[in-house]
View (tube, rainbow, N blue to C red):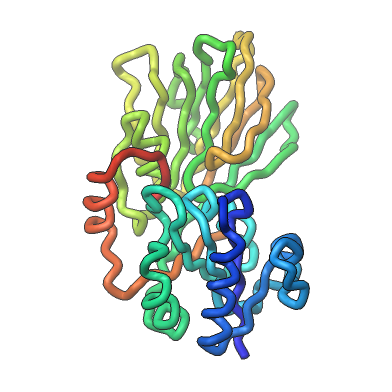
Length: 289
């Protein structure tokens, strides 16, 4: 019997009956559902508990939540290469494949093989301090170097590969994947890029010059952002809007394509531009597509 992971957003109200419903549906379809130990404990189903380190063997992981839940799951599962099937319990659901109302009809066929695997590039962001790498992050959407709450602007020196691009006086810089092109980068004036493209975006946030524009860069080049030493306010690295790391003057953030990828299960007729049209005509939200 093939195992299928179930990864819900524990903060969603009323999630327990829904997760029980999904588990029962998976069993009825002939699958063996598993959950992280903490989820299995909340559900009072200890027999489902499996550490995430063992999830490389599962057929797919059903992620129940919004785009934030899926972004977190993507980072958690990146090393395992396990396909993700997102079920939207949030608002727009840019990254998820099924709405809750489609679960009954869509779950079985998708898990049975009526799907395509949508491979999404990820980023790795290294923080370098005093010449040493001190922290690594992985992102599906973006890595953002931005001012803290009390800073007016930050001065950031940017390099693409070995070439110095210039110094930005701005609220920050966004380095985004094509998936993240419809998230923070878009809000900052960056272009929408098809997720199949092997590129990285560099987008300034509220730059204090008219000449600063978003750039599209080959994934083979690293983007290096140096926090200028004259900055006096707090500067932060934020990854996918979920992880934060305080930066000091002189710190460097090096961002490049990661060896990990996110694999999303999609229905065979998935069309990025059709989804884009539908989602962007709905009311607002800031998430990858």
